[in-house]
Image (cartoon, rainbow, N blue to C red; front, side, top):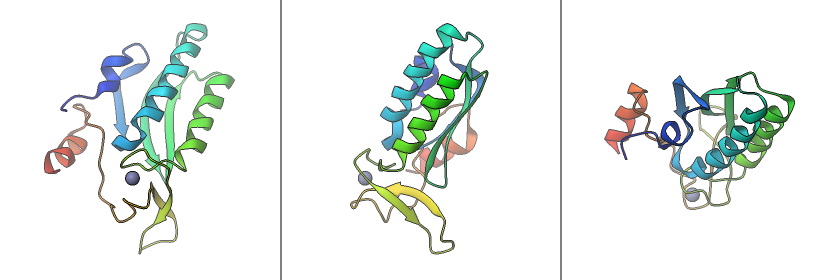
Length: 135
Ligand SMILES: [Zn+2]
């Protein structure tokens, strides 16, 4: 894989400067959520998503012109992400690092020791692309 599947599948929803910083295991949750936001875009045509990332173990979707329902959709995805392994998509729980008590990711029992970033390839993001080439 060398291209972000999201930009191709949701061209009207994700902007030109769209960035995605989540791992493969969350891809179906992300797709599901973007599909719901696409439905909201019918009502609010200016709705855009410009960033999808993992922060402290939560899926964060940032954009503009979000309606109340769009915010609810994004919030729901954030709650679901807390129990989905970022590596494989199976049920998981929060993990912390040895440096801080904060949650740094979500992993299943098979992947709890995997701390490296495994990102969805995004050709617009130099750093993400380099990380993927190293895998
Ligand atoms: Zn896993």
